[in-house]
Image (tube, rainbow, N blue to C red):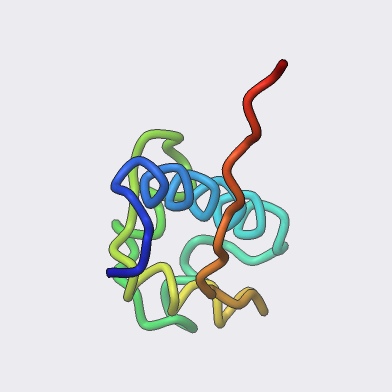
Length: 84
């Protein structure tokens, strides 16, 4: 067991989605170019980049990340200390 809880993983995936979506939008590449260069179906890239609610599989996200010069890696988050 890694010590991660499902809620930790979902928060992490949300962060990845946001960062990857922002990098894609700021890349200067068209959706067609990203699709062709990363080997990802156009509809998957378009749906992800244009829609704030759509997600990608980890494998597809990794392909897009490589194209955009990003690295996906696990990061252990520290739990917030209770106030008081």
